[in-house]
Length: 465
RNA sequence: GGUCCCUUCGUCUAUCGGUUAGGACACAUGGUUUUCAUCCAUGAAAGAGGGGUUCGAUUCCCCUAGGGACCGCCA
Image 1 (cartoon, rainbow, N blue to C red):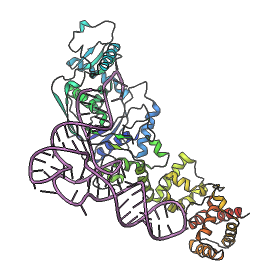
Image 2 (image 1 turned 90 degrees about the vertical axis):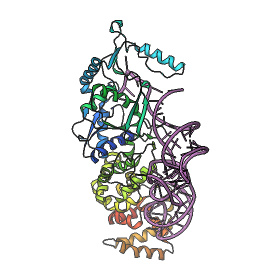
Image 3 (image 1 turned 135 degrees about the vertical axis):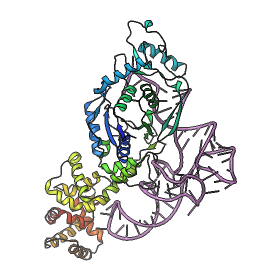
């Protein structure tokens, strides 16, 4: 068989949601697993709704999550002439015909069908009529002459054999009355011309597949393999759409979900490999297959995305984490000043233990990032006279230390606990509030060491006064 | 309404006729800990219902119920 080729074919009519990303991911993984190619095709033939910004967003989204397509992106609207050519060929072969029903006439029929509660299907009025009967004032559409008798079987790589009665598929329009091709025609011609071997797409395309197969057959083109993957559902159990909140990539990147984590989550949503949960990029390419894609739709689970992200934060290379964090802040939180970067990089080793997202790291590192401490109004009340004496005592002893380390600081703190007849909290809490503005935060030694001697001194002294 | 698809813990899933039905997330409890966390341990939690087939069904078949997708001169 020829080299495996898959494609992702979104229409640029809105932001890509993560169901689309997963479809792209599966296509990409499968092609890479098979040593094949993966292509991007922008289906922009709906001129009304297609927008260039969405196209850019799609390309960026794929790039963000690490999916890179082979070759140039394929733009469907540039191939319209080819699609029309095929429509005319189909006409010549007798596999398609001109239909002179006006849009109003069709609408009327649909309305009537709905009233009678019977399923609407185009009545094939012009299928066998003579051209000479054609009304002069109506521009015809071209319809595909669908099979009427018998059944068709789709050998789906995920769903197995799916059988359908041919007469439930209507004579669908392939060329509109303005002469432009419709989706099923364009997609089929493109897939053929791009030499696609595997069409992996959402379940919602299954009926289209039955239509498209008939075009392949009429043109005597070699059929690709088809795999229809179950859709991703919302918590409510409905098909995910662009309008759902927390559905686009940006919804995740802006709260500090990392590409690798989301990729790993999406991979395991509807696909499994025994009990394995964590897949590096290479592992996912190596392990991925179509057989282990589940048949039932799966729901999006935010807590799982978060925990996956948390795992990556804790286990990834710290330099990589740092650069991703810097990038994240630059885009969503404001750039970190260069003199703070080193401090944050060092602090990451403990900061990451408190974070599920990059946003958490950002929040928890505010005490380093800001020049002036932001005090929590409730917590600052905890610094009473007694606490001030602790801070003052610590401060004067701290001044004498040249290069603070945990080993040097521990006896100092312990000494204060004794001399003030208190416990660790009695010393640690005032210091933490004075240094970070909050009673919650990293360990007190971590705070002191990460801030550096001068900054600690400055913040403590401003609190005693 | 028609056609098609799906159904194992709350969620994602493992199981390719014989298991105390396993794992992960979330949840609960306990422990470690200077706060918040982390970390560790433990626990609760599932085969939609009904018929078959079989020595034996979560697994194969049928029916019912529930859920979903599609039914555009959108893609």
